[in-house]
Image (cartoon, rainbow, N blue to C red; front, side, top):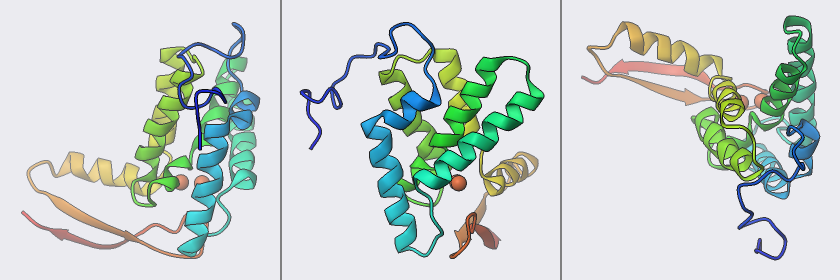
Length: 172
Ligand SMILES: [Fe+2]
Ligand SMILES: [Fe+2]
């Protein structure tokens, strides 16, 4: 059980990095992050998904960082991409459906506790919240059909990104 003694549950919103910017290595060492990544992996495995733990998080962090390294000359953008990559699936600890949104909010809590700059935090949260293609296309569809309510059902098992649209029905 987390407690104030381990500096985990009630840590003040000040940086633990002594003034230097937060990096993905700091994120990897954080107990709360580790708990989310580990449990999210356990839960997604239980419902038939492939590995979604430290290996997946680290791989995505590396890829995201490498992509930004090629696209953006600013080293900080690389760091933020890697952080977002590492945290992108922690929302699975709450539930698979809309895990990108719950993950963004969870990440915001962690990053605030670790003292990340609010603008950087917003960038990371936005990246996490939009990492599922299905949600992005759903948002676009909602934008086009603002006068009707459309229900989406997400389901799927057994692949890295198994959510797919099973049915779309207009309910109003
Ligand atoms: Fe993922
Ligand atoms: Fe995901």
